[in-house]
Image 1 (cartoon, helix red, strand yellow):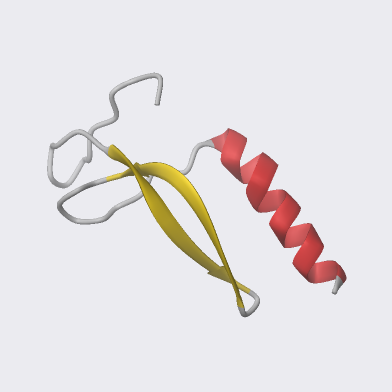
Image 2 (image 1 turned 180 degrees about the vertical axis):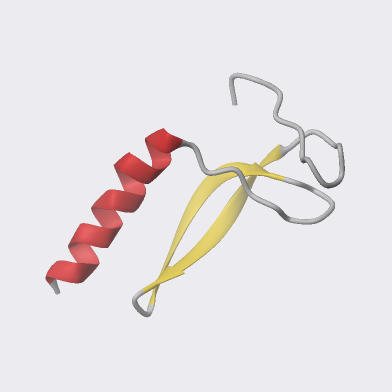
Length: 62
């Protein structure tokens, strides 16, 4: 994580954590910034356009 991201709700620094995603009956994981108190996640544009997009296309093609 290049910059310090702060949770709006809790006002604490987000920490890189392994996070589980569920899409079309499949699970996948990514290390993303997450609030250690409330669990709110920050998904940056690079992840959305990269890995998440690849997973989405792969699953929809099945």
